[in-house]
Amino acid sequence: MNRDNRGCRPAHQLDTAAGHVTDIAARVATARTPSEALTALTELEAACRQAREWIAVDLVLVGGWSYADIGRVLGVSRQAACKAYADPVNQRMRRTVRGRDDHIVIVPCGHAKRDHPTAAGDMYTGSYHQACRRAANAIGGQTFILSARHGFLHPATRVEPYDLRMGQPGAVTVPALRAQARALGIDTAGTVTVLAGRDYADPVTAIWPHAHRPLDNARGIGQQMARLAELARTPTAPVVTHTQGAAE
Image 1 (tube, rainbow, N blue to C red):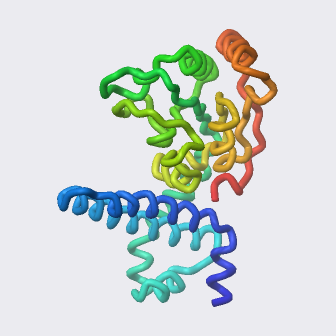
Image 2: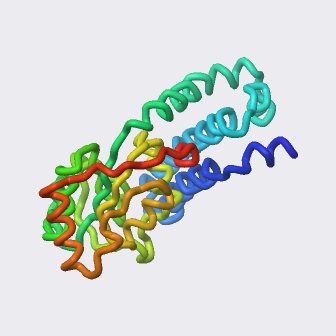
């Protein structure tokens, strides 16, 4: 038990796994038809497998567990645990090293949207979102849209219109965002810039404490728009100190 407590002390892996599974489990609870329930249960089974892998990988890399330790908890042999998790452990190690040079930019979704399903990069039509996108393009790196409903979206991801803002009931949670970041392979990014107000920037810095927030010193929408225009004209890549905690 002491070993288990020591291995789980950096509880991000538990928070990430729990958020991932909880969001999918909610779909089971709200299913209205047997087919919806079966679909949600299939997604839940996949989420549980993924969460189990995340916890096992982090226990090996962060908690110092051996494959024999993992096997004892899962009720399998050391060889079976090694076969199941050695590749994910090695992939995680490579991603952590590679991630130190990764640069991502997070921009918020927007209230103004198209009235039909389309790619996330084309969904949000408001002037604020468009200003964020122009600044993000100038800064460079991978751009992701933080959607209050869907979480982190690649601009090419197809979505339907919705009416929801961060902080409202039903909005995506920080544990779920951590799970998405890990699934997308961006949770180890060394340089993160978030172009958004506090409601959207705070969840980002909960995942990446080293995230650069250039709009924090801008008061009101007018100053934020002016700062975004400045960034679009003369982008400055932020200098960030890489922290091991951001990859855990």
